[in-house]
Length: 425
Image (cartoon, rainbow, N blue to C red; front, side, top):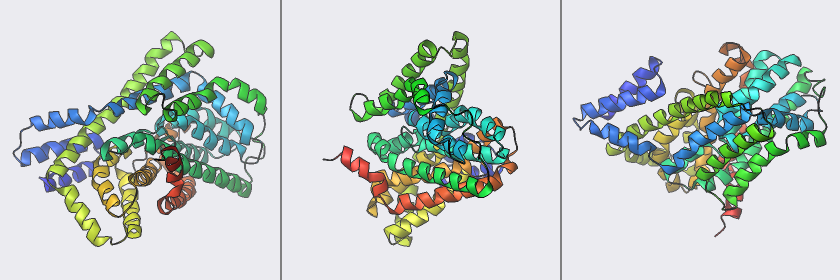
């Protein structure tokens, strides 16, 4: 059964068939090869998505779309620009900082790419930055959408590996801040080297005025994250609160969402949610069949024999995840691999929350690496350029995040210090 599944999946990938269909078809053929009842496929696909924490995914996607249409994202850009926009390279730094703030609500890198990129990519181009650089910067900065909580991949890892989602969320702040600050420092130095961005401060609002205009927008992450860690509501309930707050601010306070806009917003959110849920359902069936065939246990034993130390294990896993992330969508990779790798990580003494952050940060790189980087495609769509124009500008950003990944991997306290404070026994 397993050889049939793996062969089918690899062949489908080679034929550029979508990830969800490839995994689903491989699973169905695997069931046929083992002469099992086909009703297993329906049952396991339903079980894969019949989990309460997964309800947060469509709500966070909807919240991100409401923020984009309701003027929240634009005000966050002005706020971020008032802080860092006055220095050389301030506009690229504004892009990173805005994505960090937006990530604290949306939970989705693609939503962040469209919401912030629609404003900042044209602004960067207008200020003389190359179009390829602007798109690469936006795609990379939007990756923070799945690292800074709330995060859809963290929810998927928590469900798959049976790890506290609340602990994963609080642990995500350290890595998220590290990557955000590293990117801001890099773009500032790079712009000074290239001579770009000397007039980035033009048209910048004062900090007080920008803060006043963005006040309601800035309250959103405070309410969501404060509610989660204050014990007022769960991460799943927080996603519904985010939708309600974004709707009230966009319709009643900023008055930028009209009744006719709601259909477009809801349609876009439903389509995005359906794609993710379809991947989860198929990946869940695939993971069930692999588990039934004893593959996770076999891989675990093999890894323990080949990688004799925690350092070698983490290096080997990072190398494998980096390659896997290039070809397999982040959500699908986490659902399939987390149940396999998390127990092995625990055998080597690696905290499952820390390992979850390593997996999420590493696989998030797949969103900005060819050939299937979803953030790249989104940024290309906004910038209206082809993928090949992004690649030369993208390489330095990938190297910066790889350096941060090594720090996150081998300095666990970057992820765990806040978790240990908040969840101290």
